[in-house]
Length: 116
Image (cartoon, rainbow, N blue to C red; front, top):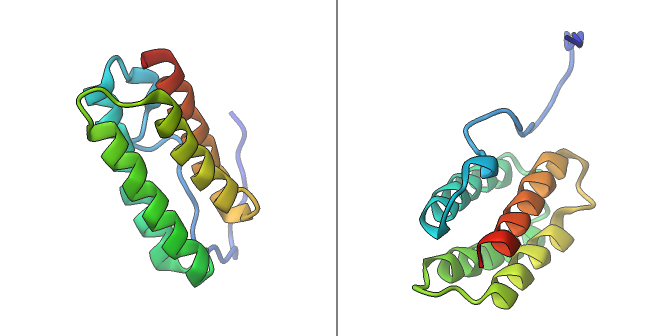
């Protein structure tokens, strides 16, 4: 196991990829929605810490709302769903502190391709 010395580090926000969000357990659209809601909550935490500029935070919120609305549809449209996820990825992928969130969104997009 690798050990990192994190003493004296000042971090505004850090996504814990080993946390509660696990797209690997998704078996259907209902469980996908549960994981997406967890991811949305994690984004809310990241936004609250100020890792995104205000304009980007507004866009991320809007796009994530669109992702959740798409996920709640009785028969989600795969293309629309993927587009919304990719739009969020494009907005945040340049933010170093959001690297883990980009990975989680990529996993979500993979699940959409598999399920729909």
